[in-house]
Amino acid sequence: MQFLRTLRQTTISARIGMAMVLITLLAAILAPVIAPYEEAEVVADVWLPPGDGHLLGTDQLGRDLFTRMVYGARNTIAIALLITCLAFLVGVVGGLLAATMRGWVDMLLSRIVDVVMAFPALILSLMVLSIMGASIPVLIIVISLLDATKVYRLARALAMDIEVMEFVEAARLSGEGTWWIITKEILPNALPALIAEFGLRFCFIFLFISALSFLGLGIQPPAADWGSMVRDNAGAISFDMMTPLWPAGAIAFLTIGINLVVDWFLHRSAQIRAR
Amino acid sequence: MDSLKKMVVKRLAAGAVTVLVVSILIFVGVEALPGDPATAILGQQATPENLAALRKELKLDMPPHVRYFSWVSDVARGDLGRSLTNQRPVAEMIGWRFSNTLFLALAAATVAVPLAILLGMLAALYRESWLDKLLSISSLSAISFPEFFVGYILIAIFAVKLGILPGVASIHSGMGFGQKLLAIVLPTITLMLVVLAHMMRMTRAAIIGILTSPYIEMAKLKGVGRRRIIYHHAIPNALAPIINVVIMDLAWLVVGVVVVEVVFVYPGLGQLLVDAVSKRDLPVVQASGLIFACTYILLNLTADVLSILTNPKLRTAN
Image 1 (tube, rainbow over the protein chains, first blue to last red):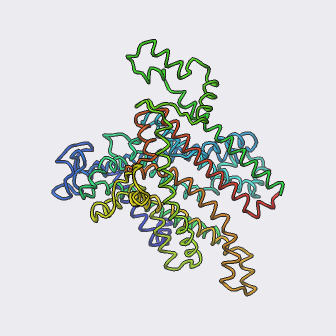
Image 2 (cartoon, rainbow over the protein chains, first blue to last red; image 1 turned 90 degrees about the vertical axis):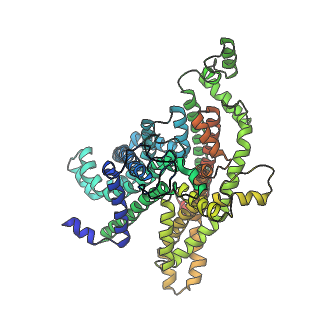
Image 3 (cartoon, chains in turn cyan, blue; image 1 turned 60 degrees about the vertical axis):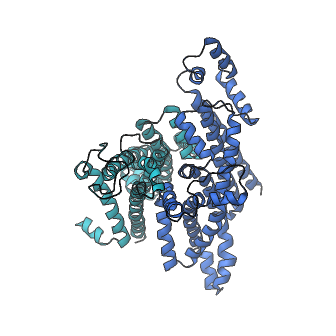
């Protein structure tokens, strides 16, 4: 009931955003059901135009583009989601520890984060990938650590603000431990800001992986993935075909959807706080 | 004044330490590579004499810290080593490409900066108007678009359908300035759109932040005219945060150029870096990564120092 009531209070742009995210998620989850062919199955001639049993035509190897799109959603979203979760796990735990323990823990973590953030993320990951070789585990570790630094900064700043409030002081005076204060006092109060950040961070990571895949250094074939589909089909553009624009547009579609929802969410939690 | 100087010096020192740490990381990263670099360069068929000679040339027989300092002094003298794939001096490969990258970034900045500030101000002054809403929705979409989406749409429309602009931004030294500009119109627009959106949103936020502050409220209550409030009170105070955003976005621009260069096959440093990464040509990766990182750090440092110098609150702190 509470959920339905909240849903009725949404703005039009937030509803559009939710629909966009939902469509993409459903395509990702139901990929094996929706897709008319196998993920890497060669079914027809190269770069066929849309129609004739192939909703979006075929790709540079003669695979069904629609099938690749749905599986691409599944692969890219799954990896981006995993990376976002890892980044949040490391960043939030680090940030909250730094804010509650202060002292050398805070000093050490903050200096490490400063150095990593001084480095441009794309260049750093390109260098690491060239040294370690481009593979999914390397990709996941590098990007989640890079983004953990940004989550750390936010979580630390939030916790620092909450930590000086009277109710934390009260909890501390009544003898509660650090763990209790973090989970029962600080985390619930930092949650709205962290949820909004989760959405934005996911967008950023999603775009980042897509860019790396587009550069040929992200998710490797034959797994379908939107970024590398753009790269592989880029040549079709000069034959006046839309092929690379479908996966590129799908990336934009999902990120706009999430941005619209996050925009509404931030607005709403700001209003609740003002009340 | 003294504490201000101290803050600037402190920030500059922190910047110098960052460059030092970054250079060590880049050096150690490549050092940590499994296997023997000499074998990697010459291949498995190399004779032991050749390997020994190369090891000496690469100073592999010396301890790591000696090698680090000799690498740094080589870099400082402009000697960036040789490419593993074609044996050419890296400095020679990079120089021309880096100037191309800066040319593209500069072209995008020249259009984006004034436009972003103007649109951001308009959106802030006419807040909640149809113009503000339109700008807000279109900038939100522009931020959500991957660069290659914008790039290929522009190519599809202007190069393929209309045939009025080149879809491949090839540049060579024999071209005149006008020809070069024409070649980079599409990559410039692509690069510009993304920075423009971000810069505009930040400018808008900065001005709105000031327009809602108590001293503007005070001016309004005293009956100061709207025009005077905007030109004498709001804009001068908004300049500091806006300058900060502009320079940080320029730093982003120099790095964001990588994807755009690949879309338009533009002979810049980003394209070279991506090629070198996929071929694992480490000296080239090392050198171009170092240049990108230093440019980025330098621009961010400038933004920080300027914001210390122009922020009245920081000026009077301590």
